[in-house]
Length: 389
Image (tube, rainbow, N blue to C red):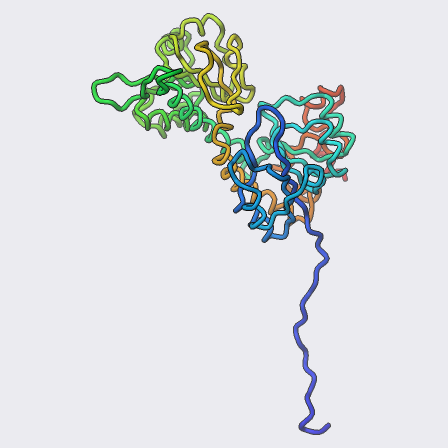
C-alpha cells in the first residue's frame, strides 16, 4: 500500500437507544375542593429536559396565574382535555369524574390526593375498569418511611391557615379589625392549636411571628416535647386535659385542629363556650370531623368571613395555590425521575416500597382498603402480588 494512501482507523459511533418517551398529562382541576396545580413552568422545563413529553390542558394553570405561553416556552404542548388525560402519567390532585376516567389510557398512572377527598363508587369502578394504576401522592413514602408530599402540604396548610385567619381578623368590614399582636400595651390574640406535627408547628411559627400567644395540645408527649423545643418559650404546651382545653377554647381568637394520633372531636358544648368571632380551621386528614357541629366552609372557593356565624374552614392550602405548586414541583421531580430511571411505572413499583404505599388501584384491583369497601371488593396485597409476579 502506498505511503500516501489514507489508513482507515476506528472512530467512536453514537449509540442510539430505543427508549420510549413517557408523556405526562396536566389537565385542569375541575372538581370542587381543589384549586391547586401540581407543576410550575420551571418544573415542566426540567421534566422536558429529562426526556418527558408534557401535555397541558389549555388554561389549566390559571389558578396559579401562569399563562399557557409560559408553559409552552418551557417545552409543554398545550392541548385539549382529552389529550391531556390520554397520557402515560396524568397528574390531577382531586378525584376525577367517571367521564374523565374513561378518557384515561388503559393501564395509565394517575397521580392524585387521597386525604380529605371524597371518592365515589362510580369513580373507583371506572378506575378499575380502565386498569388504571392510581397513586395517592400524600401516602407515598421515601426510603426513610417519611411522607414527603403529605409533609410539605401540611407545612403549607399550617402557614396558610394563620395567614388567612390574620387577614380575616384584620378586615374592618367583616372581621374584628384587629391584628394578631405585636403592639406595645395591647394584649395579643390567642391561638389554640390541636396537634404537634408539621402543620401545627408551621401554624405556631406563623402565629408567633405575628405576635400571638400560642397554645399547643397533644397527648403524644414526645411529639409535643419536640414541637416545643423547636418553638422555644413562645409557645405553651399541654396534654389534652378537659378543663385546660375548655379554658383555652374560651379565650381563643383562632382555633386550629391538625392531625393527631387519636381523634379528638370538639363537640357542640365546647364550641358553645368559644367567644364570638372566633375563627376555626380543620387541617386534619378528615377535614370537618374535628368540629362536627359546625358547618364547613371550603377555602378552595375563596377566603372570606361568612355571615357572622361560626364555620369550620377547610382546605387552607388552596388559598396559596402557587406556593403549593412550587412545593409539589420540588417533590414530584424526584419521583418522576425514579419512574424514568426504572423505565416505567411497573418497574418503579417493584423496586420502591415507598411508591407502593401510595397505590390506590392497580390494574383492575383495588389496593386501598377504603376504596375497596366503596365497591364491595377485597383489597389486593400489592407487595405480595409484586413479589409473586
